[in-house]
Amino acid sequence: MAFKLVISDTVTVSVQGKLPDAGGKLQAFSYSLTARRMPQSELSATLKLQDVSFSEWLAERITGWSGVLDEDGNEVPFTSANLTALLDIVGMAGLITTAYLEACGARGQQKN
Image (cartoon, rainbow, N blue to C red; front, side, top):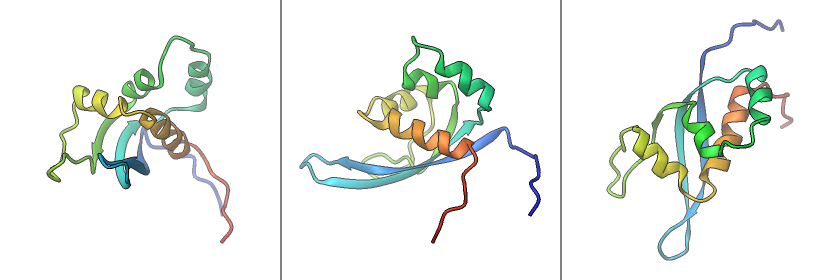
């Protein structure tokens, strides 16, 4: 099969994980982010930066989301302040970074 060199400027990032509730029980979550796709040249340049946190790095790329809900089950609007709150959850920025890099890049064929 041929490869078409047509690449979108944006990427949808599926984020899944578990977070403990008030009682310490792990609760599964999933949501999607829309982000600016990053080419390899930008990733290489970014890896050389030492003064930028994952949260700051992600905030420059994420442009929207879906499936982020409040405690009543209502959609939380995408805003800079709400993104900051999401990225402030311990471990969330790392989880998003991994999902983002996977969504931006090529993957080999997986076995069944």
